[in-house]
Amino acid sequence: MSLAGGQKTIEEQIKEAIEKSVADSTAEVGGDGRHFEIQVISPVFEGKRTLEKQRIVYAALNDLMSGSNAPVHAIARLETLVPE
Image (cartoon, rainbow, N blue to C red; front, side, top):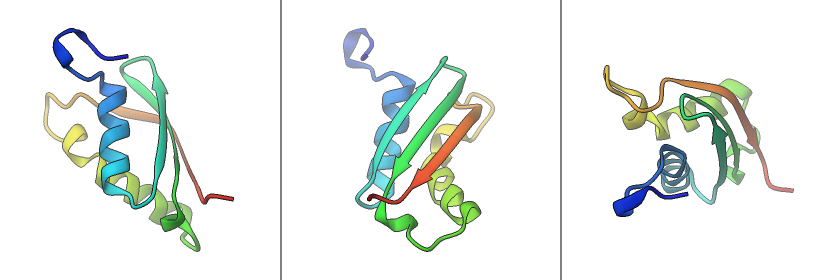
């Protein structure tokens, strides 16, 4: 759901940042506006360890998570999957 005036919700911003940064990915984002649950599916994750996959996603979210006024403070759950 977008906000009035064409502004994107933080969930939409997270989804866009991931799908722009992680090749051939689809992201599903939910949460309460403070803590987020994210599922990312991408062939980029093939053969990588969990920590490597998480680093890829966190790198995509760097701009949204840095600084004292960052809109994203916590990822409650991050699931990284390879397409079937």
